[in-house]
Image (cartoon, rainbow, N blue to C red; front, top):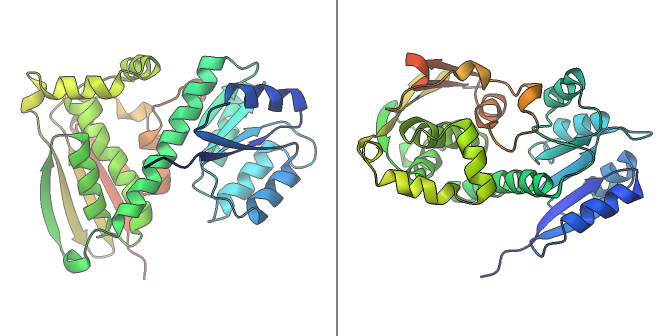
Length: 300
């Protein structure tokens, strides 16, 4: 069964930039719509009847600039979760930080390097596809456990982590939001915790197309194959709490709770910050980073 092309909206007031991006992204996997200003982009989003998977957005444009358009996108629940790549020649940390705070989790600098553009677009598209897939599978989980008060589960592989995320999300007030953050924390427990694939190494493996193969390789090797991650669910008055624990060496989580300007141009390393922003009322770490504690408030 063939995959439908991913819909990408490209917004830039320079025709040459639109032409360059179109050439770089000339791929049957992508269906591009190019527009030259923020007003037209906003009209396209509202009226096109297309479910966009990614927006590549120029920061500096006349009229509605990239920052204002990004604020509109994040403020509208129909579009709020579409990944946005902010493309800019202004890479000053304050400018980057402003974009991050408005919800631009991916960044590109001009002029474009082909490999980096492809890598960042692929990372954003992969996140979107994973996000949509998680939500589709929520309907496969029954509501019979809706009144569960406490439970503990163990998992080893990324597949098991995502399957558990589907189930546990149904115990939350907004499953379609909860599943995103839960999956990120649980995948991190396997990938970065038990299998000890660090930030720099993941970047290299991803660029070389060897990330998935390395995951499978390590799952078969000592000491990794003996490690087990766990997730505990607790329901209390007014909240649900998840404790995700791994058996790795821990890490300095403080640098990942937010996306800093110096990491904004990397293609990965934003999962914890996105989980914190999208899913959890509170997210903290314990035991040297081996345990993530995510809390979701119950409303009503």
